[in-house]
Image (cartoon, rainbow, N blue to C red; front, top):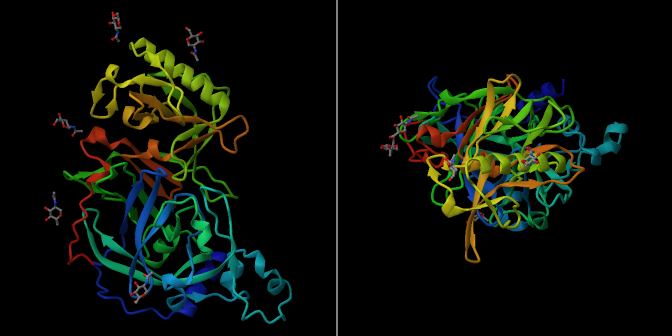
Length: 424
Ligand SMILES: *[C@@H]1O[C@H](CO)[C@@H](O)[C@H](O)[C@H]1NC(C)=O
Ligand SMILES: *[C@@H]1O[C@H](CO)[C@@H](O)[C@H](O)[C@H]1NC(C)=O
Ligand SMILES: *[C@@H]1O[C@H](CO)[C@@H](O)[C@H](O)[C@H]1NC(C)=O
Ligand SMILES: *[C@@H]1O[C@H](CO)[C@@H](O)[C@H](O)[C@H]1NC(C)=O
Ligand SMILES: *[C@@H]1O[C@H](CO)[C@@H](O)[C@H](O)[C@H]1NC(C)=O
């Protein structure tokens, strides 16, 4: 019903704009480069906002329900964006509380009151209040191999924030791109407007020299040099339904270290995926038994723990650890999902973090103790997702994951970003 409102309303406010080449061959999949900021360990998405399209960088937040940008005078927002009235069906669909008086008394004249939503800084957890606005969003289309021409739509809905809400996020971002499980996330709006499948995929990279990539509205192919289609490497697990939050959850049945089961007291562990969390965070009890098991298993392969290196506790001298194409040779970690045959295997490149400072050079187990009382027992962070392809299929409510793509002789920084001009 609310979804219907959204469709009906967006059709009502905007007559279809002439598209550059409305042929049957036009691609409905699009992409955006993803860059890691090595100071904050967060990821940014590059896309085009405004008319004419203006390159804009937003913090990538996998779980945020909607996007926001700062609307101070110097970013051209006011001239090209439209605000939404408080008494519009779209504003009620958003559940904006600021408009309660309009919803409760239909005779009040609210047509000049703006619709308000609270943008959230997912790193500092600060919020502000801001007008809801709509404007143009454009992304390069893709055939899964290269980017092509820009394709856009005019009713991209997002919220305004004060400029101060950017504090704590990566330098240079204009706001935040929310890819969460919500009708108003960037991904849902792109799929709806481009009439594409409700699926997106992320391939994050820690490479400072080349970006990773997000694919929107595509089940594949996802080609990476040299000509490797990572959509062929995926295993699937259900996305766990959660009626309240827009976060993506999966369920683990167990964790194994070099094949040895970590002794946890439960067998259905709700696990969140988060790009706003740099390193996987475990509830204290899980952290304790997991790190102990890891230390015990690494001792079996003659790895001896050395001094801890903040913020990590379990570290090994780098010169004692062999290198492999999937990172340092340490025990593998398997995140096991429903049935023993589906697991996400984490190799050294994702489990370990290299720290070279103060005259020491170590590989440390890149997981953190989240404390006793955590909202979620396990939060899988950015470092553990790098060089893994993750496909969020909202039609089938499942997560597709590749495990380390380094094992397939490619990496997430190997997408060919050369623009092909006849791809539209
Ligand atoms: C605003 O628009 C003007 C003219 O189109 C452009 O020169 C300027 O760079 C834009 N400002 C920003 C912050 O992008
Ligand atoms: C690790 O090994 C020690 C010593 O053998 C043992 O006491 C401990 O229970 C083991 N821990 C786990 C979690 O297996
Ligand atoms: C560990 O070291 C012992 C003694 O040096 C050796 O016998 C054993 O083969 C080593 N094990 C592995 C897995 O390297
Ligand atoms: C990766 O490359 C190595 C060496 O070039 C080759 O032996 C191996 O079969 C390749 N692996 C895959 C999955 O293509
Ligand atoms: C990248 O794509 C362009 C356009 O299709 C192609 O000409 C080029 O050879 C590709 N680069 C590599 C390294 O394959």
